[in-house]
Length: 407
Ligand SMILES: [Zn+2]
Image 1 (cartoon, rainbow, N blue to C red):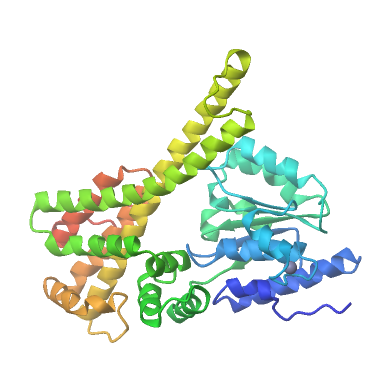
Image 2 (cartoon, rainbow, N blue to C red):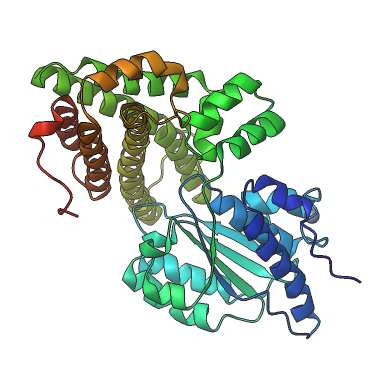
């Protein structure tokens, strides 16, 4: 059998990442050599894939996992290639933190999985999404397995950037970095894969600023477009403190509603799963010792769901803040007389007007404050409080406290 290094069809989902595709294709080919007892320097047992949100970290990780377990190295067509990326293959485990972080218990379960021999393929692949959310204790439990994995186990850790993960992870993994896909990469994907009309695809690609999942949402869901539009409009009507407070309230409320919709459907699925795992049928009453066990499991699930809901609200608020970041980037470009394409091209007349209300220095101050607000929301400041302070700065950037040295 010859080992080819041409990209296999499975990589088509990973758009705008030619270097990553090249390295991972080589890794899959070399994995084949290693199986035959030959040297395969392109392959290793622990990987770290980093890239900005929406760049395709999990797509890269799951495509890699699929290619390793597919008999044709990632044909993209077979049952294995279809099932592995969605967690439907016995040798591919895709794990995400259910709460805010991975705890020691989660890590121990991963270590147990990693010690098992593969069932249906040459490799057992463990994809750890959001590896930046591994606590130090959880990582300590993983350390030995990462350093000396069982011969057929491959770890693929994903994180936004190397700065987000513990240095001990970096030193024990091979690093692969993804870039933000270009607007034209995203536009082409929307047209070819989701049959989106070209004008809509161009809008969604620009508005998403290279975030593929976000672009897909904007192109396919009217509710996403409407929410974005209303978030962007808030900054045009900031006259006084009460209007800032109400704008912040509206932005956080719509982010919360979007997060709740997503959380509700996840919670319902998990509640059903919990009942099924205890064999509880609709309408039956559980008593005695089994009731205690069910209650304990329910309590634990409830706590996890509550933390996840909070995290999702913060993620949705962050999404709105990224949109505002794009808007003020546009305003700054206009103020500087740049001819770069605007993210919000369709709002050019309104943005030009907004640009006359302040100076480039004001816009820079606003951009800094939006970044600062994203960080504080990420670090657990109540979103409403943080966004109210932001709106007040947007209304009057010159009165804002400096944030340059606070982080
Ligand atoms: Zn296949």
